[in-house]
Amino acid sequence: MQYTTLANQGVQHLSPYQAGKPIEELERELGISNIVKLASNENPFGFPESAKKAIEKALNDLTRYPDANGFYFKQIIAQKFAVELNQITLGNGSNDLLELIAHTFASEQDEVIFSQYAFIVYPLVTQAINAKAVVIPAQNYGHDLEGFLAAITPKTKLIYIANPNNPTGTFLTHQQIADFLAKVPKNVIVVLDEAYTEFTLPSERVDSFALLKQFSNLVICRTLSKAYGLAGLRIGYAVSNSEIADLFNRVRQPFNCNSLALAAAVAVLQDDDFIQNVAENNRQEMLRYEKFFEQQGLQYIKSKGNFITLDLNQPAGPIYQKLLEQGVIVRPIGVYGMPNHLRISIGLPEENDRFFEALSKVLSQS
Image 1 (tube, rainbow, N blue to C red):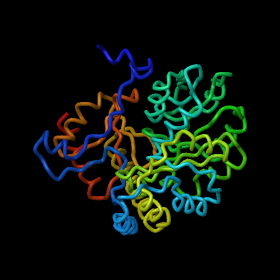
Image 2 (image 1 turned 180 degrees about the vertical axis):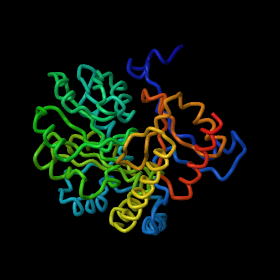
Image 3 (image 1 turned 135 degrees about the vertical axis):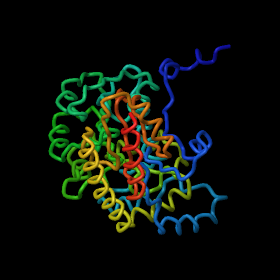
């Protein structure tokens, strides 16, 4: 019996998401230690002491189910961003929410719009539900919003926009997004994926919650995996109008956020000093990356995230492998249709020094 034939058509032809290579795996493969991982856009500072204390306190209650409604976490979100509790949906990371949104609104007769070079989960979830993916060619590696508008048909149900975009780091301004939303039909749900918003400067950051008050078809997704350092605990949230949030909560698994994640999330969302330190390190080290690439005569994509994408102008696979042998893990992004590019997460200064040294050595030997 070939059980693959029993799966729905979208799943039959689906390739699993390929995560970054773990440090432990590289140690086993190459027998080396002192490895620097700059592959998965993780927080190089780890998580703050405030989260550690909250987790330690929550350990005593692990025999109980988590709070299915995440009341205290929702309270913090509501207070911080001036939204109502009934507008919030919690997820097992924002990845969970991106999938939940698709399951709520789209099916096989519908169309989902997203950009070329956008987050790989958008095409994966679209294919899994047998919807039609409408991929808009990128404009300077970013979103062509006019192209999005031209592609809308009566079958369009969802539009995904990552801002800043992963893996290219491109960025849309508040006005660009506002002008776009004003032209999108109200029966089309627009998902604004802001996984990396904390790395943008406050002066340039999109005021997405203000946009939500204007546009009822907007859904904002955020995660605590990046700037907040909780990638291993998997927690995120979506904010939408209350009617849409009610629909999400009908589909959402009742205990999709565990107790430790909820406790840590409450703590870190109030830890503004930690986030400011993370963002400042990212800003300073991003400048060092840009200077290094320019000195080396290498092309790169200007990024507003906690990563930068390098164009090697040659297949990136061999360079990636040689960097691995130097004990530096980065991310080849051929799966995004960018076979000549590497995405490098911004680390601590000493980690970035290791990358600069390793890449210089590899390129000098090429």
